[in-house]
Picture 1 (cartoon, rainbow, N blue to C red):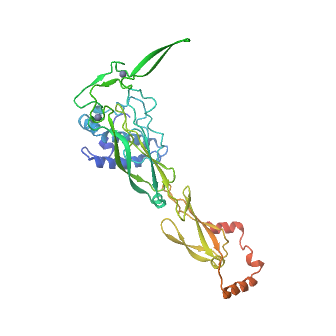
Picture 2 (cartoon, rainbow, N blue to C red):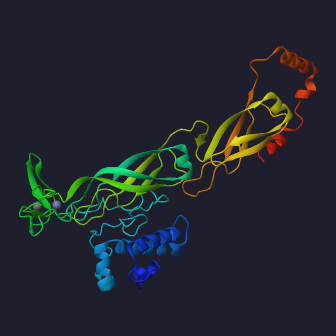
Picture 3 (cartoon, protein in one colour):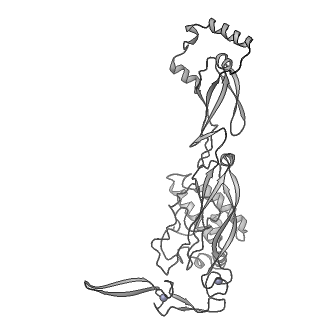
Length: 382
Ligand SMILES: [Zn+2]
Ligand SMILES: [Zn+2]
């Protein structure tokens, strides 16, 4: 990027915009420029990165105040992440808060883990949470307040680990490098290996007076409630990544992510396969023979469907667009309705007689198909 635009301008805001406005503007812009919506569009990709970066800064109170005071010079989005890469990638570090990156690849962005030095910033642990929804909730989307037992940043020491007012010291064991070298003598020669310093756990600093709340860990276990939005179209094993709601990072690293794993309760009428729904409906002999307008339930409403005269048992017809919405595109699948013929089980004498009479009048011609197979298909699937 040649010259950096003002972060507020990037989000279409003016200076002094509220946190809620910033979040709102970010959602809007992120949706607009998301690469899944603009495949192959380099400009949109750049804009998306810019929006992502602006929000990462403006959603962080500390960075925001630095930026407000010093402009771009006050905040370098790449600083403090140990240069491990991945920043600015789609669905990358932090900043997404409760935004649902349902388009994104679960493990695609981010990528702080691998290359980070042991005493450098490390991304916090990801957590998984199973959520069960009803079939209707899966069809229309829903909200859930979920409760998580997780580590959160200790507020007493702001995650630093040392008692407020005390200093951290450079670890004397590793001189602040976080690494120690050990030499092993074996019959085959000398081997040198290095590993994290056991004194400081690889952080390079030693806490002399641990924080009285967290005992030096910088984090405390807490029950946290968060509100999540479950988009329409989720299915069993759909994963909704929620950026930054995992456990806190260490040494200034970003929070981990939360992965909500969905399971959907079965429906008593509908079966689902991808975005299509399947339904079986009973019709009577006279309806099948004479044709009739029947009522078909769909997820949204009851619709009427004209069963043609001479409909055979087991015939399946399709109602376009009456299936489940696709969780990514929102496009609806189809509803397949299979017709089952109900044969009367109890008859009185009069009915038995009438059916017998009718049976005698039916000849071979009555059972012949009037239309070709192809024509029939065309009828059924139109
Ligand atoms: Zn603490
Ligand atoms: Zn050390």
